[in-house]
Length: 114
Length: 117
Image (cartoon, rainbow over all chains, first blue to last red; front, top):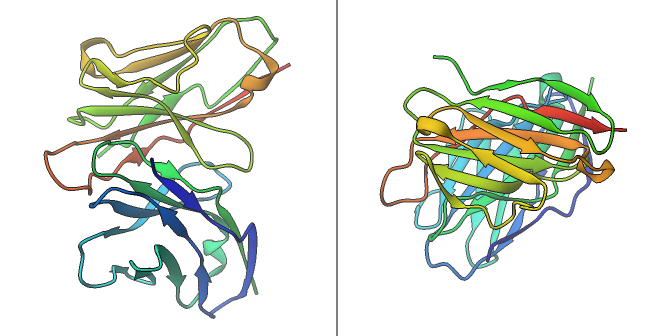
């Protein structure tokens, strides 16, 4: 079974600064994938970034990067140069080797201040 | 390319009434998911379809919930009768599953927000 833990219920960041959203995971699968989704107040889940457990390099997508520390079982999301439009709920999720479902964490609400 | 379409976006019903949600996945996606998202929590899988076959419905409360995916395209999720605790957002997602690997991105619809009074 997979488990995702997001320990930060809410975060504030000043516009144009970087912010790190924490995510730790637990799984016994040898191979797995880690995802981050953004959910604005409108409700849709927007895919941000993916990290495979065997990927040698940390994933990056524009202003998003994933700080993957396999030994610590952490997959923190780093958002650089925060924008007001980044204010939303952020979910970390994982997918194990033997199933296709995503297991989500409880989420972190991010508020960007001007 | 059109995304995942869900309807209705909002539904308010009284307890013990039936309700149905509809989902049209992205064209060509063979796998469809229904997730339940309670307020302040992450989505939880209710059921997953590969084409028209339900391959994971272990989290679906089968006494009151049912789902179908006729012809492996559109899907309907039904609750009968609805209870107060069913108030939540019901998300539909789809993906094109390929053999091997863990990266098969799931695309989500906007969800249906259900309120049971």
